[in-house]
Length: 411
Image (cartoon, rainbow, N blue to C red; front, top):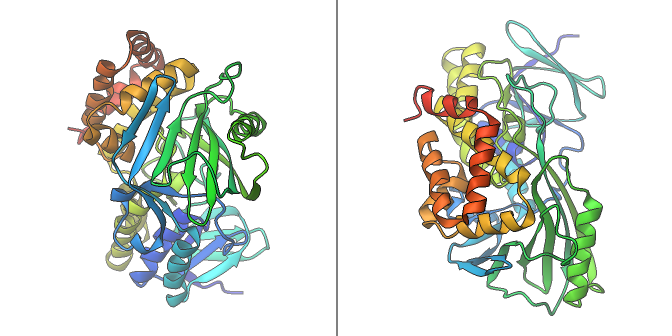
């Protein structure tokens, strides 16, 4: 049987996969989406700073808070920067509309192998379906077996356990989101460090989550659930109806993909999770359109190999690769800190000029700019924390730093 060849096969159906898929569909590419239960609702809550919303996504915002709170045992900081929660159902529906309008083929199954030929790649799916495409975009997650990486290193993990409550009365200001509250749930149980994240929603709903920012090995869900329950008991919310439960396991510091390979990784598969924060949705939404344009243009004017090269370059230009090497050094500092050091670090971090920390968290800085912001943190943290950061940078090795500052195009 002859298998027809499509322009694009996309592995995955999460926000990153559908973002680049819908952008390609709008450009006229014929697309296949391959994922288990591809139209299933996204379970995670996706949030970002409101000023990072890309054009066209404003209609998919469920709630915006004018301010956020960062709290440590030393006190609270109120940050006047709007923060937004996306409406996952609305965002997914808008992306699927683009794909359906472009007559995308949708295959319910998991890709089990990808074979590359001179004119196309063949994707074998778990239900014995074979799909051919000129370009395969792998947006199936950080642990995909189809993405080539130059470096092998163990990931750290951001783990979070959260609940959506029906809570008509609670102690949170509805005009503010709690971005990070490092005050321990229990004075006798604060290692490894974790923090509270809280979103007061409309209609009496409250989302609260206990998060381990970055740890190796991963912190257990049970530990975070226990800490969150301690907080709920303290606030007299333990008897509230639980409307939904969220468990997040995010690999952080996954090595960057090789720049030349026969798939185009995207989203977490492309290591687009910010090693400093664990956020990725803004990065994926920001990169989807330019990556799609690069791939579609090369397919139309040159060919498959050129489209693969253009897509990989658009996702990770050399200057961005250099900056990410510095973020990897920062991640090692986060993995090794105690609860007390973590509180002091973030209290100082958010005392810096907003332009510095906001661009740092967005991942839009050059390597030199990342280094400048990392150096500036020393002015705002206690000496003991500063020495810890220095020690971690030195012990991580000089190679990432040399790569960041010496690679062409990083100035």
